[in-house]
Amino acid sequence: MRRTSHPSPDHHPSSRPFGPHPPVAFSLVLLGLGTFLLVLAPLLAWYVEPRAAVNPIDIDTTAVYTGTGSVFDVEQVKTVPDQKITVTQRVRGDVAESERSGAAVWDVITSVDTEKSLPAADPHGALDFTPHRWVSDRKTNRPVHCCDEKPYIEGEAYLKFPFDVQERSYRWWDNTLGATVTLHYEGRKKVRGYEGLRFTAKVPATKTGTRMVPGALVDEPNRPQVLAEEWYANHGLELVVDQSTGRVLYAQTGPRRTLRAPGGDQDAAVLLDSRKLAFTSATQKSAVDQAEKESGLLQLVGRTVPIGTAVVGFVLAAAGAVLVARGRRRPDTSESSQDPITM
Image 1: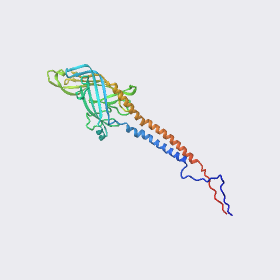
Image 2: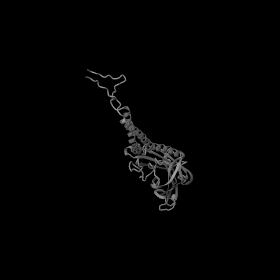
Image 3: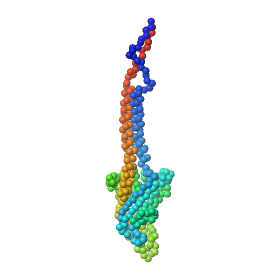
Image 4: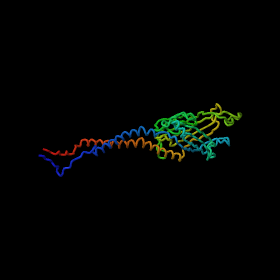
């Protein structure tokens, strides 16, 4: 006798899926994505951000200082007081040389003008014209002595400070002095509403070189030509610097350049003397705008994005882990089909 069991009308044979249950697959995706973001977060902070904090090689910027002071008029052969003075500093990057050397190669032209020489179609016609080249390590801002650098620049800062400026003294290259001066940290100061770190210094009268001049110019009328001594001092340097990027937001200088007779201890002629030459409003605005943009980018890459990535990664990884654990504890609810009974 053969008895065959028949499934009830309400019975439906189950079939096992080929692979994990869909919720388990989804939880694994969450767990994997969360883990990836947790690994990515420190990489953004420790690897990507330092590579964004580098001196540019394609820089093209101009800073203008204005003020009043005394200047030597070569036509009148005397020092004229109360003159409007404009100092223009143009900085351009040599991209090809920078890419070849791996350093930031910047060509700098500084010109000093009075109203008589402005506007100057040719900077060589200025009261004073000084071209030079600054080469720096793109990460540390330290001088790199290569690529026809001129002069031999030293110190920790020139034209800009290193990234992540600290509340301490820095050695700043003074190109007129031909040496470094120590800038002392003096607290914080706002420039157009944007806060920076303030540094100050003074330069005592220092001999910087010699030049051939008519003897009468240095109180030696009986000598047609004299190798006079060039002296330089600075009434006061003040710099306000963006802490994140090292960009100078505000600069003020008080140069005094004079001539002395050979071996003399008194100034015989004043070439330039100003208590205050400072960034114009337009230069300050440009500097602040650039600092806000650059520091914002560094903060985004080095802090905001890594923190956000870590938080999202943690949430996703935790959610994925919980779902995976629940999926593994779920019992198999599929029903076994009944085998036919034969006799």
